[in-house]
Length: 240
Image (cartoon, rainbow, N blue to C red; front, side, top):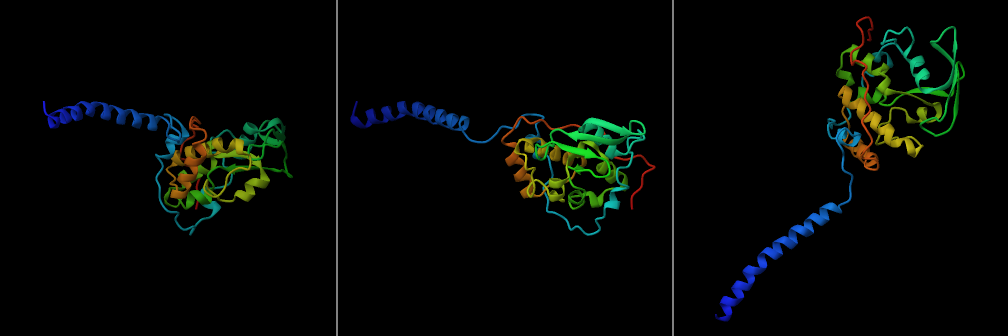
């Protein structure tokens, strides 16, 4: 066997080893790659189901477009605000029955981690729309029927009792522009926004989507919250 033939045979014999080595290296790199894996049913996975578009103008926005504040859309004879206070406060007391909340405590407030006292008439507690009404208006709600906007404004999935201070600082900010000071609550907060936007078909901007993913990448198993309130308010409610 001459030298040229021997060299060719040796080269052919080495090919499987080279291919195997390459595949092994790729697998190892993939296993060790940074980044979170979004599990089924997670808020992180749900981010990719949201429509991404630019923010529309705020033209035509008015709170009244979402109906009378705290309408009793679930027909339990209590305003939505009191329903959320009863759900989120501890040590609740009432005025004249078991509907009108007189006092209670946020222990702790999700946005700051502090204890905040609620007293009717001089409250330090607000009911926040996780997805602000103005933000929703600029990302699709301007196209909705009034009954859908009313349902959105009163859906418990989109409502949370919080410290008034940071809530008023939030304004109509989305995930890209505002997050709770309490870092331990950010995963739950963003998951809530994703759930609301998915339920109602509110779109997100590219920057907002990226910010959502950045927060949820630190908690890839954070579940997407669920809410069973209908997306259409009863016919007796109207909005301009």
